[in-house]
Length: 236
Image (cartoon, rainbow, N blue to C red; front, side, top):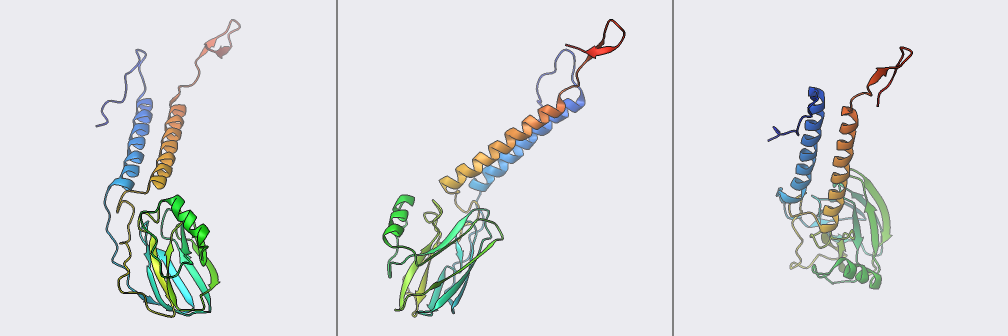
């Protein structure tokens, strides 16, 4: 597959130079293969989330790239100060954002702009972001005084549309007909358009930088020629 590494000049080329170019091309192919694999190959789909009875402390984490664990909470105390611990196990940034519209399911067909408009109309009860894999974000909010259920979503563009949402009920159980999306790992479906463009840009930048570095390493030293006084001067 990598037999053709380019033409040799008439003056010849060292094995080191050929190896550098071959390494650069192999590295580029490998990096691009990883990028394609991230967006194209299926991975295991997580188990459906189980209803979780919560107290005045919520612990939630990302599941795969576009899911929450747990994706449902029930019987969270009303009129109480609720603390939240949000852990990311994802290479992508995510938010945990609770809608303030009680008893309403946001259409999954809504675009990122429509989702932003929804939260402009119904400001979030609570919202927190975590941008680092393995990172933990913490915060707190006062829960509604009356029983009711609400949806929580990820507000990073494209993530809600990929199925990153769940439901939380204060002072009651969730309706039995509410369902959540299976947790998607990298490639469980294709990456969202925004994430795919970001990953692609990083891959291209790394590949180009590596090729330029290898070319710089493989450049031969400057040739020197004797001068009239017998010393050696740099050649043309």
